[in-house]
Length: 360
Image (cartoon, rainbow, N blue to C red; front, side, top):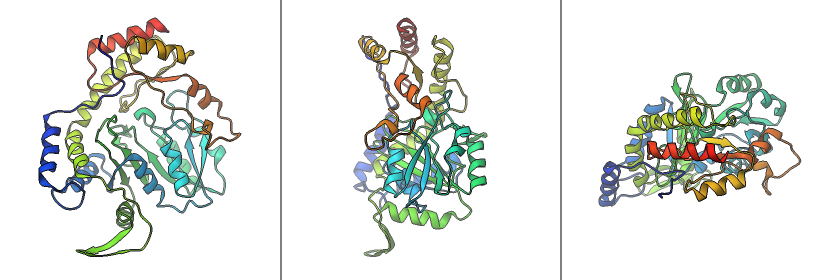
C-alpha cells in the first residue's frame, strides 16, 4: 500500500524547462542574466495588487526584513504562540520582545478580542498569522492598530492565494511576509517575499533591497557603498524560475485544495476540525484528537503521514515564561495536520477520511 504524503509539491514539464534555461544561462544568482527574480517580483505584485514586492530567500528572511523597518529595541510585538518559530525569532532578531496572545479556537488565528489586553506603551507592532491559509480577523486588527497607533505586519507564510475583503492577502498590512518553501502552495526550492503597502513605498523598497544584499547601496559597476548592516537574503534565479511557473497555476492549485478541504469538513466525523472557508488557501488542514500520540501511531501504521503544526512557542525552552494561554495550550496538545495537496487522488482522500473516522 502506497504511503500518502502529508505534503507534496505539484510540478510539470514547465518547471523542468525553466530550471534548465537558468542552468544553461550560467546566471544563477539574482541581478544579472535573465532576471527571473525581478520578473517574479513584478508578477507577484500584480497578483496581490500591492504597492511593492521584495523577493528573498525564505519566509524567515522576509519576516526579519519586514520587522527591521521599525525600531523594535525595547519594544513589544503581539503575535500568536501557535505558529512556526520564525515568527517569534524575527522579533528577537530585531531587538524586540514577543508578547504571545491567545488564539481563536475555531480558526487558530489571533483572537482579535484578546489583543487589546496585551497592548501597553511598549507595544509597537501587531503580527497576526494566517494559520493554515485561513484569513485572520484583519478588519478588527486593522481597527486596533489605528486606534493605538500601531504597525501591522502580517505573517502570510501559509496564505499565498488566500483572500480578505475580495482581495488577495498581501494588500492590507504595511508589510506582508510570504514563504515559498517546497511544501507551500506556491513552491520553490527556497524563497520568500515581503509585500509593501504604503503611500511612501519607494524609500521602504530601497531600504529592504539594500538590506537584502548585505546593506549595499549606490552600486555602479564595481563601485558601491554600505551605510547600514544587511544580510545575504536575495532569492536565486532557479527559485524564481520555478516560482513564475507555479504562480501561473496558483489559483487552480488552490481550488483543488479547497475541494479536498470541503470534503474533509463534510465527511470527517469530528467536531473539532478546520472549518471550510472559500477564501482560505488551505496550506494545512487540521483536526483535533484527544489521544494524539496513539492516533499518529495508528495513522502511520495505515501509511498516512501526519504532522503537528505547531508546538506552542511559549512552551519552548528559549521562550518559556509564566504566561498562561489555556486555549493555545489545549489545542497544542490535540492538533494534527492531515494530508492536503494537489497530488491527492479521490481514492486517497476517501482512504484518509475513512481511516480517521474509524480511529476516532
